[in-house]
Amino acid sequence: MLSRRTLGLAALALPAVAQAQNFERQIRWIVPYGAGGPTDTFARLIGRQMQARLGQAVLVDNRPGGGGVLATETLLQQPADGHTLLLVDNGMVVYSPALYARLPYDPDRQLTGVGLIARFPLILIVRNESPIRDWAQFLAAARAKAPTFGSGAVASPQHLGMEYLARRARFDAMHVPYRASPAAVQDLVAGQIDCMLTDSATSMGAIRQGQARALAVLTPARLPALPDVPTFRELGVDIDPAYAWMALCVAAATPAPMVARLNAVLNEAIATEEVMQVVRNLSAEPVPGDAAAFNAQISAESALWRPLIRELGIKLD
Image (cartoon, rainbow, N blue to C red; front, side, top):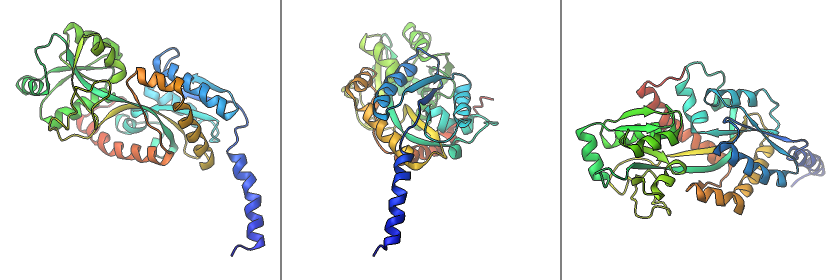
């Protein structure tokens, strides 16, 4: 049975917990990409929805450069009180420790997840004029001669996803890095490269316009936007699903009640029709869930991708 003293202490603790979940000043959301791009636009859209629920302005602070290193350092220089947020992607929290020998922070120890925003399925595409009509033809051709494939950057989810696929399906492929994924799609359509394993936001326009043909998707189930395109597992490839994704993180020392409040507000913001319309237009998938589930995902993906990066010998410093 609880004593009067215990009850009294519990009552005193309640206001402190409630206060810890209150936001007392404007929220700063650090985005590791330049203003005006699709990621920045998406962040501002979600920020407006979160602002209405938190009762404080959410201001986007663009800090591009260094593969997210500058943005992450900026976050870690601020108090860990939940008032500074960081937009992250696979590269920043999963790949970076394997890519940089001198990373100035440890994302495993110094960051914690708030929640996923959206994930973008990876789709294997060839140009529409290609004689390759399906996965079987692609695999036969790839085993006879290594195809060239493009991506928007070295060590991007699209680059690593294709390297992963090549190993699981036992063929070689030659990577051609670009400064941005749309440029790679343009060269694919023009016949300068053979294929791409690229995200839905980048590829769906070319697929819908009849410029590119989708051969397979690296997802657990077929995509509603591409119901006739099989998954790699359907085709007999022993491979785990993989995505490009974006998410929200804070400093690891942020109080748990603040993280929980931010997670709840983020999920509410993503579920609004305004945000969902953008998600659908990008053929992306919303991923509601709690912070613990997202942190578990980071750990699982790190165990998959970091050894592959080291095997490939990719270094960015």
